[in-house]
Length: 303
Ligand SMILES: NC(=O)c1ccc[n+]([C@@H]2O[C@H](COP(=O)([O-])OP(=O)(O)OC[C@H]3O[C@@H](n4cnc5c(N)ncnc54)[C@H](OP(=O)(O)O)[C@@H]3O)[C@@H](O)[C@H]2O)c1
Image 1 (cartoon, protein in one colour):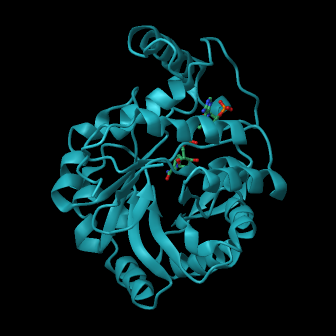
Image 2: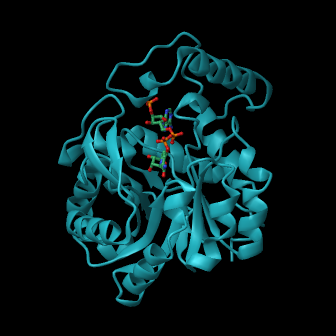
Image 3: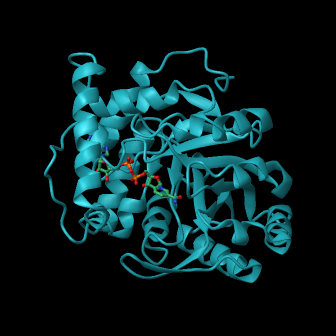
């Protein structure tokens, strides 16, 4: 594994982390404790130390599966979770971004994760009106002082959200999480330059374009109703699958696993610290960790 410094947080994170939205059950299947444990156990063996989760991947369900899996090795992990929603049932949530709601969620997350601190606590893709609340950030910064949060972050909803990105330092955040992959390069225009200027760490989410950059899907593929991808229009899905096919034939070197290639592609950008691909099984963790072999040195955040 390779490690980079997550901007001004100073956290040393593996360049490949594990995204765990999947553990919440909205990706076509549910997870037992043993299955989550196998995924995270293999990730640890491979040197991965970063887990991204959220309050609403199930009702703190993903966090609970993580908490029980890493209870004996909490100090070896960097846990990134989020706040801002109440989960009701699959694909149904209510926004909860008021200061007191965030503190309540933090306590629920700590309980589920079986820990007394979160390494990175992220504003979960809320609207600007929710972001622009001084009381929210004052309250969260007091939680940092109290030791319940090590660092604050912002997971921006639109990957062009320059308002939240450019105000990150002002609200006390040290990292941005953003959609970035070979099919969606929007952050290169304004978000990444702002991150570099403020020395913010960057977690590139959806780095496999929801799995399409693994190269295994053909246009026309339909997803089951319990898979979040079924909620997108077929035209949009087909367009991404067609584009992925083109990239596979024009850009991915022969004999190279496309998923690993796609992750290494993200990690080349000087602003990107780490990628957090969602992993559904041990084989995917292994394939994703293997991207490290394709990552060259000389990145600004290596030191
Ligand atoms: N608003 C937010 O803050 C937000 C939003 C979205 C995601 N996230 C975070 O970012 C993480 C990653 O995003 P994502 O999961 O939406 O998208 P992603 O990482 O681009 O795609 C994940 C999917 O790709 C497939 N896959 C993974 N590794 C593979 C491999 N090696 N070979 C073939 N297929 C592979 C799996 O699905 P199949 O095998 O079924 O194809 C997996 O569910 C999430 O888990 C979550 O932690 C945050």
